Image (cartoon, rainbow, N blue to C red; front, side, top):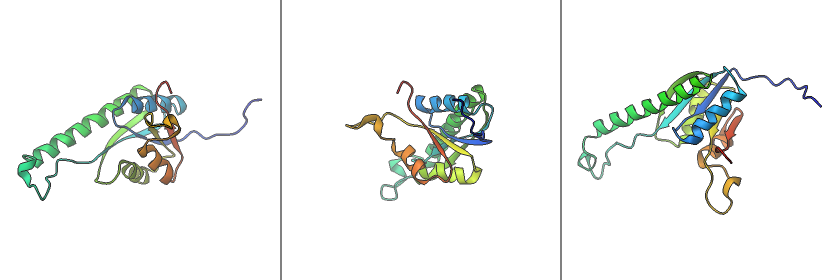
Length: 158
């Protein structure tokens, strides 16, 4: 029996991207499910180059240089994700989210800003005795607190 439900295609999706094979796979799946849709590719970056106030700048060297290098790497990564999404047929734009909160919180904050119809994230194989039955912490946090539907794409070959 054919499915007669009218399922609207999202107009805009947000894709969490960290450069992993799982994130690239999530982009591929999203492009197949939502061809040609507008996609905001986001990379959550937490600066780690800030000096420890107890140890001082000497422990890190020049923290400004370190933070600039981290910011450049984050921009490069989101650029890569945007190119992957565009090559898959999505109308992709990239943005780096910088904060000191959890990655899930940063993704959810970006979703509040761009107001996507769907959030897309990959997930890694969970380790431990229960294996694939559990989502990774980022995917779990996004699913638990999102105001919009979340597509969690299992790892390739799962």
